[in-house]
Length: 195
Image 1 (cartoon, one colour):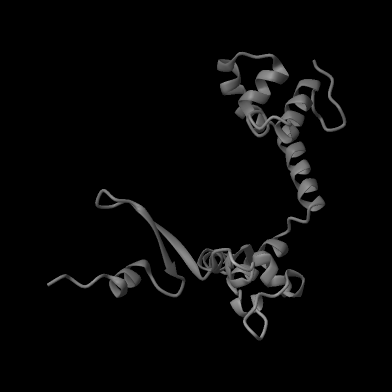
Image 2 (cartoon, one colour; image 1 turned 60 degrees about the vertical axis):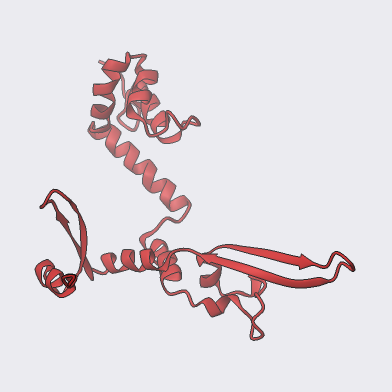
């Protein structure tokens, strides 16, 4: 019988877990089959079945979960922080990017929520060829998608429910307000027949 470490893992299981969580190779990290092939010097066929199976081993699953939680805590991936970031995108007021005179604020002068919702600012300057005089400056401000952020927040708050449709040969996901049945929503929002 193989000896186990303090985590209840054999040497090969520990190697598998370390590769699965932290390999520098993107083709290996998170790939149970590849990690199993390396840790156990196994064939691709054997690893195809045994890699995913090893993820279900209680000691392996517990160790990987502990490592995931530690990593999230280290970089503060909390439910509160995720919801806060989504709220910055969902409730962005575009005026937060501009001064009273309409010019773009310095990034350090923007409110935190506006900075976090900002995807990019592109500045284009037109200069006169004759005297290097600036003719005009344009700014293109892009922020993350409000509608998607609102949808995610509404799902989190239980304001939307999904109904998966598989009828009529065409499937899809229907987002419905929580206070309405999918049938009521479809009846209310059905397109009018063309005349």
